[in-house]
Image (tube, rainbow, N blue to C red):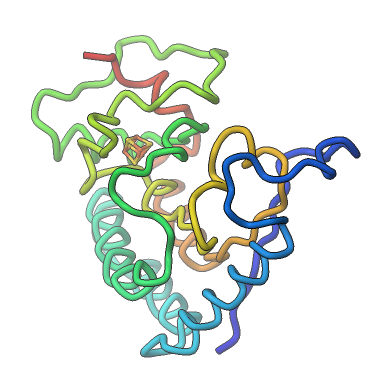
Length: 215
Ligand code: SF4
């Protein structure tokens, strides 16, 4: 199976940082983690029931041709991802109770805001969104007892994000901003998501904490 990889390094590492062992990690160095991650990803892709890229292609074409409303299309996209992730989740280190990624930027568009409001009674956006606040290190307001309280309607980035590292110690704030991580790229899913946003009439992205009031 042909898959596309995305390498992400959030900032350039200093020589001093490169010499440091990973904080709180059982693995000796980043190479060991990368090797274990590659093996894990290979196991996932080798055992994938159908070609992932073809599934993405077919889904994008269906969404593009469909006359459904953007909200319904978003629901279809999330359902499709839930199906695909049933397989992928067997190989990830992401588990209920781990929430490091909920303390990073969590981008959300207008159609996703509408979706959350529609699916969760009593949740309404702020009249005026906040802006320019420091977000990294502040847990998402929907994180309750280390679990997502709007899991079914969580934003696209939360549906999408997944790690194949052997454990979650690379995800801590100490480590995640330093080391180059291997992530699965989803070009056609991103294309579907971008199409839905464009059809909704608003492409603007916000951070989730700027949009909803904390209860
Ligand atoms: S919406 Fe849920 S999954 Fe996404 S950052 Fe917030 S708590 Fe985490």
